[in-house]
Structure formats: structure tokens, C-alpha cells
Length: 360
Image 1 (cartoon, rainbow, N blue to C red):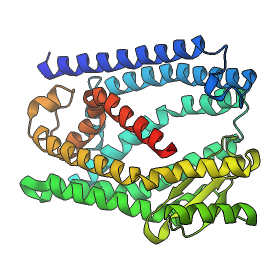
Image 2: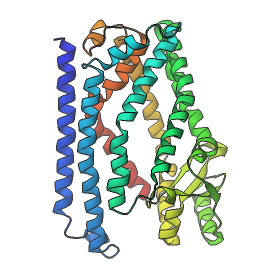
Image 3: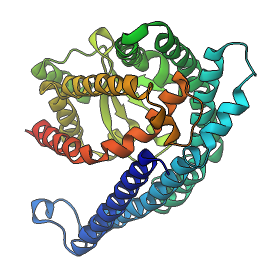
Image 4: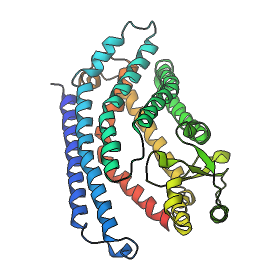
């Protein structure tokens, strides 16, 4: 057995065991404190609501056990189990272009892996969420969402994958730098077009009509120095009873969006408080900092991939004999989370810090 195979199996076993252990600790902590509302908000939340929230969190965490198990089995099946090698051989000769064969390998693998997640997604939506009264989605809407997501993924993913694979093969030693620039540009483009072109494919957005609330929100935005192109209400109730508010886009495309469920269930003061938290992230430049971290990490990752793409042990250790840019990229995408899992506490600490800062 290859040395890297043993390292991969050990890292995967460690990451899986840690995830399961942390999930069990999370459940135990919640159940320990389920019988009493924390003093910090005991005057605002009753015991019944607190216990329902605890039960819901426990149920979601228990479902994560199944996700962890499925992800582990699927990863092993596609790597050491020969899945990627089989798909690579299956696509050989189908197209005259190695570029198209590589794109077909990447997209077909991602489609298959997404399809394997559908049963758990169905249970989460129509089982768990419905049991706690949150699901409002019909089976027809669920299927329609899948179709739209697949079509959108192909429309956006195919040009991106083809471009990345071309750069990997044509740009020489420093291809990883060109791919990084393309990746950053793609992400910024998606952020810019999402509010006006992508989000409306899944939801309806209407201008906020409550003049009193609108005045309060505009005053808050002015105080924070946030310039929005509009205030909108999204029909989130057609999928879920959960409520939220968010802002998206940048520059002239920035907009504030409220779920209709949020406006229905909360008072004006509470709505303003929810939005104030989101604006806290803007004021503290958390979004910019997270994007900077993401782009820096992706640059480092592509630099590592450039080295691994030339290493035969990387392919052989993961059950693949065909050494191409497409197989290297696919393997790296699948296995890198296993080796970066131990960085999650750092990411979680940073996220927790940002959440507290946004409330200040």
C-alpha cells in the first residue's frame, strides 16, 4: 500500500472521528441545559420555546451523523474505491478534445456526488424541518429547485471549468497564478450579478412597502454609512418558516433583503435589531476580511496543487492512474478538506469573534 494512501486513510479517520466526537459533545451539552432557560434571556423566551429549540438543534446534529458517514463513504468510493478512475476511463475517447474530457470528468463527478445527497436533503426538508413546523416547501418546488440549481451550475460551471483546465495546460509553470486571478474574478462577478440575476430565479423580491419600517431602516442605514440600491421583501415563506435578513452585492448593486417570515413574526424593534447585526458585519468590514482570507487560502491551495500535479504518488495514493490536470484538480478538491479539517477551530474562532463584534 502506498505511503500517501496510509496518510490519507489516517487523516480521513481522524477527521471523521473528531467530527462525530464534537457532534456528540454538542448534543450532550444541549441536553444538559435543556431544562432551564439561560438567565440572559429568560425574561424573553419561555421554557417550551427553549426546549423546542434544543430538540431541533439535537435533531439537526444527529442528522449530521448521517451526513458525515455518507461523505466519508462517498469520498472513499470515488478515490480508493476506483470511482474517479472508472469515470476517467469512461470519458476517454468520447470527445476529440482532452479539455472536454477533463471538464466532463469534473462535472459528472460533482453531479453524481450531489445526486447522492438528495435522499438526506429530502429527509431534512420533509422529515426533520416538517416535524418542527418549519418546512413550507412542496415536493414539486423541491424538484424544481434541483432542476434550476443543476441548470445554473452547468451554465456557470462549464465555462469556469473549461477556462481553468485550459489555463492549467497552457500557462506553463505559473498557471496557478492565472487560475487564481480567474477564480477571484469569477467570484466577484457572481457577487455583483447575484442580486439582480441569480436570486430572482428562485424567489420573488418586492420593494418594502411598510413606510414606517422603511423610514426606520433608512435612518439606520444612513447612520451606518451603508448605501443600498433598495429595500426588498423576499417570499421565503414558500420554502420555510425560518426568517432572516441579509445584504448582497457590492457597489451600486448592494441591496437589503428581508424574508417575509421575518416581517410577519417580529416587531419593528426586533427587525431593526436583526438588520443592525448584519450591518455590524458591514461596519466591521467582516465580509471584506473573509473574502481576503478566502482568496489568500485559495492562492496557497493552488500553489500546493501545482506541486501535487507533478507528483505521481499523489495520484497513485488515491487510486488513480491517469495523470491529467483534470484528475489532479478533482482529487485535490475532494481530499483537501480532509487535511485542512484541523484548521476549522481557527475559522470557527474567527467567525465567533465576528459575530460578537457585529452585536456591539
